[in-house]
Amino acid sequence: MLKRVWQILSLVLVVSFLALIQFSLISALPNPFRQFNLILVVLMFTLFFLDFRVATISALIAGFWLDIMSFHFFGFYLFVFFVSLLFAQWILKNWLTNRSFYTLLVMMVGLTIFYNILTAVTLYFVSADYSTFSLIRSSFWLTLAYQSLWSFISALVLFNLATLLSKRVKPFFLEKKSFM
Image 1 (tube, rainbow, N blue to C red):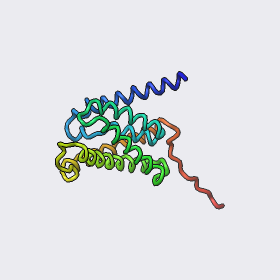
Image 2: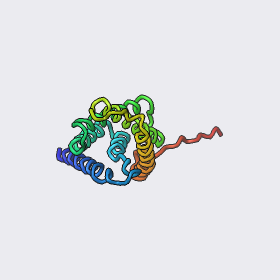
Image 3: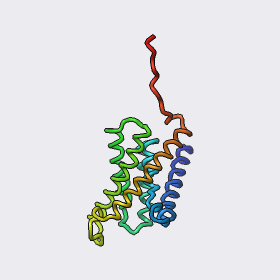
Image 4: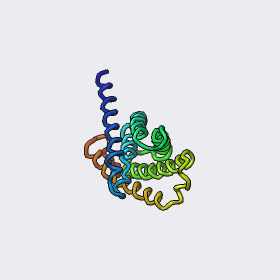
């Protein structure tokens, strides 16, 4: 019981710290580096290597803190992270069934694209001051390109790091059988 409480408490602290880093440090960086979405990368990594329940709890914690600190309506990040995770889980279970390096790359970039489109559509329908649809602006596509590049790089680094540190992720190769 104490081990379970310690795991939950450490998850809350780590995800809260990452949300604080995302909001205060990464958003203050110059433009190409500002587009790194740490929370989205961590959520996808958690979904890919752990499970949907832990990723959902992480999304709720991060969404709560980002909703408190941001100027969007409260529940915006909760909604966007949760719907993005549902979409990623559906894709992961129905279409991309193996947990390979290429699956992680496709899921990271695909989730980034889905997240950005969902964010733009949600802000368009909910926000009164969002006068033009952001999908037609060039800044949206530049942000999407930067975030996709950062997601791609993150997938490269994190998968190789997880391969080095864990035996669960070790790639396997089919054994060649000799007929003689």
